Image (cartoon, rainbow, N blue to C red; front, side):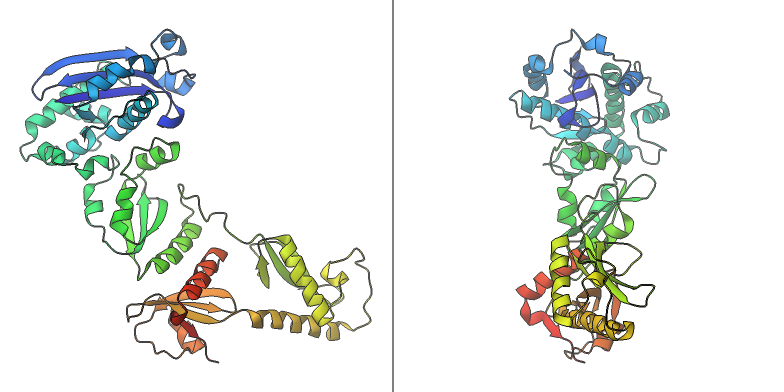
Length: 442
């Protein structure tokens, strides 16, 4: 009925590492029926730190069978039985991947002795195999070796079967129990409390630090989707190992969730978020007053300590705009760093020239739109304020009138940092839903 499994590997994720040892014990729920154990040649070098942990050397596996040669035997042992392991998704992800490479599709029900122990024997300090066995007086003969850890898991599983007076194992096996797919350290209660609403969710590590931020149209469905496949990639496996808790913030719409997600990623810089960390305009148009009193315009890579007049993705885009301003307002190319003669002398006094520069900047800013949009058509809507082309923040529409008075709208928002990604979202939304755009009255 059960196949109790442990493997040793060359690393923490299936897609770029190999199995060095495997042990499978067949168990009928009362006693052991048989067992299989072998070293495996992973066809890659075993890192020194792995050898230090397991004691398995490259020389030990040199003449061992490669996985493909034992894949049929492994598949026959596992298929049709309930796959049991301590932190089951780790072992399962490797065997699912390796069997798939050999032409076999592993599709079995799973039981995780970490999750079972948390429910059947609650309140322990740790649920790692070593600490758990120490608490229960189970001796491990060969820690961090496949057979030793498997036999310890067998004894642990037998204890869990004996103490399962509440029918936890039966409940977990009923249908395709979703809890088996959760990360080993994440309490199921955290998933049960998630709402079927749009918003932002946060994954926390063991030290209660946020390591991932995501947005969702349906928080519960999206969070569960992180755990619903057997992805053996390094990033996925590392993320699963580091999830100890989940929290969430409900938003009025998916647009509000997107805006909040972007802000939170840039505020928290979570370890496992990739997108948006580098999403920003690369160049800005800046101004300063030189030692002769002339205002100068220049294009430079974005600087954190300076506020740009305007931003661009490409240097060429900025140069085109600046040349247009030079031609339209009679600005000096040298003072805009647009030719090779920085000592070109102006006939105009600084005050006269600076008036033209300020007029050019004001004209550019005047072309940048000021408006608001609402994300829904009811009083529970949020509104998003754009002021002179920059995102100012968002607030609740409840109690507001349809009159787009700037000061009223500004007073009701929570300010958020402006960024290019959010601006793009709001412009796209306004274009898609023009009826939700609120023109600003002066």
